[in-house]
Image (cartoon, rainbow, N blue to C red; front, side, top):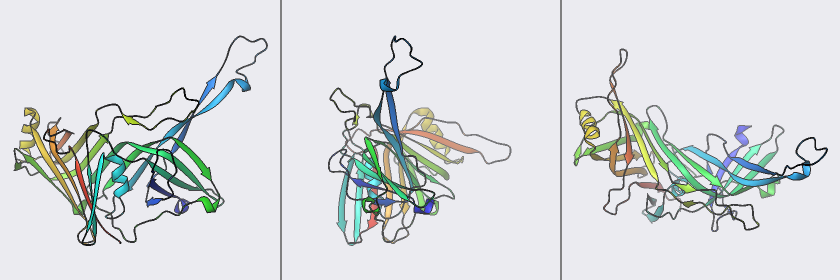
Length: 324
């Protein structure tokens, strides 16, 4: 049963070395799949019916998986840390504050991920993925929904066990509540002046530009840790109602101006919060759209840019209750 399944991650001290810890996340889908390729040798040979069984060798290519969760006001620190280049943690007055930032170089850790899958006859099988490195992520806030964070991981290797003694119990926050649309607000500024926009959906995405196929002639089929080989790309989309105020955002689009975006999420537990700051975004389209049976809508895709003053292109501040 799905009620017996679980997913959790733990930070590795060394890439590809299994972490002893499993921080539980309430994943919403199981997409962790291993990849295998075959090396096949075929040549002229009398009496050969098809490729010979002793001429094929399987190669472990690692794999990929996604962890998609509703963002809780406690316990989401490691998942954000996997997606961003820098993390700073401070503790004061009963709260733990994480600050995640984009940077020119990445110091994000690698993770181990334990996916427990139950069989139809009640046996629990733990798949332990090591060398998990984030390659993409998305953060979505939409009316009538909880706030969602999805991170795609590349992993180096996976093993499995049905021995109960080797299945690590995931650790969950004692108490946590999901951020949702009713506790989400955003501020757009053009030239330092706030531009009102009634937003119904926000999506922010990151492609971290990672090279994941680092395999070499070293008598070892496992790949080395992914490294950045392309400029990361951060993009987003705002959807809302077209108004006289939001016309200024269309004007910013056609003029190629940069704006700033701040998104605030207020936690249920007093003092908890989540803030996303993008000091330089540039809209890449599009014109407002009228309809015969709906209000005129304003969809605004944008690119997140480096502000050029040493501040991060994206800064995320996550404040959670400190159980200690």
